[in-house]
Length: 251
Length: 251
Image 1 (cartoon, one colour):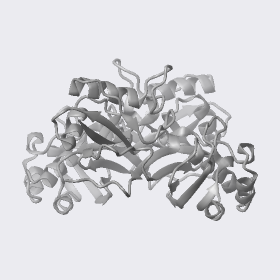
Image 2: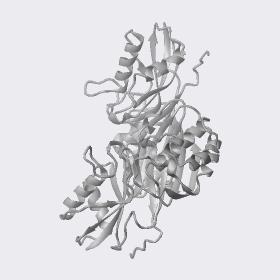
Image 3: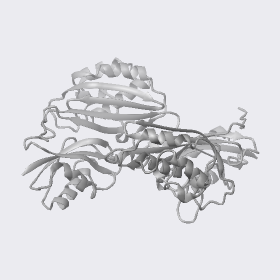
Image 4: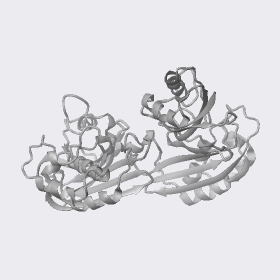
């Protein structure tokens, strides 16, 4: 038996997120189904990030165990033949049997896109959040600096979570703008439930002038979800990539 | 009576192009329908560019005549309330009664996007053409220079056209690349049927090494559609904007 890792990109628009659930079709479900047919053995993948309904990915990670003799790096080609066009396996490879995409040390990077202009652009509508009122980028950047580092992000976590330890470390939080598109890139050692979208929703309130930039410190201190801004919509969010610094792959 | 101009953006994915036709829903049809309901008089727009099925626009132009007392610049807001999310009127304004979006002097600018990498990216699939084999950008740029200027583009025109004069002027043809996305921007005083997509299909053949760059001169000289490359797919094409240098708008 061996363990195979997949790097998966998807357009989340029509999916009810990553994780299998009774009310709609999910990415995990489709990958399990197509791997099971391809490899002729029951396959259940373990995903790194259980992205929400409508959230996109450029590089989510999943692993599965198999008796197959197909080399790990060939799986992507065979699997892509079977997958719908909105799911693509960009890479596949053999990894050590003890590699776990959620429990191993990792850095996740998310990108959130905001189209900030007078009219929405139809060809951007599925992959960005449209904001009509002009956002003050300097204030958003100032506010973002208070979030970098190790903090208790309890205020930035949806209350539906069961996690007890809400301390996480954000390594980088970059905000820049090209034409009318604002791009917020966040990387960290882990993210609480809806954390990126609540951070973005809060930064938008700063950009609109509802909160002064340093109000973000008060929100952190309150450790209360109701202190932060709203959750920004799913369509703007993309799980960009996940790095595993301790993963050694023998080629 | 007055004449009102609209600048229209749309995601062409699910439409059978701009022009009304019996076999499917079109942009023109939806705009006529919603303007007719909004203004309570029968409205028929005249479009500048009859984009093909699946082609997108950031700034197509259309005009219509109306007895309405609503100021031209307010029409966009009222109309956008009624339009589906994949069609947005970005601007509306009163224009002189003799302004015609096709017969008046204009410069059209198109953008064609090619994703050139090993695997397609799901969130780019609707708005770019995926090419697996590496394209030689330098050769494509060299080839593109032969197309700039006034030429008989008969070889770059689908044979279904009824146009007799196939001489057009390309003012600019820029090719650049950001990460894995190649962007080809073409502006000119007019384009023949499928001309941009045949130019792109030909440049892709140059990029693949099938044609040497200067083969484009031979293609021009032959004045024969079969001499050029194939028509590149619709999803990569966007009508970016149209300029009317002689249009004077009184504000």
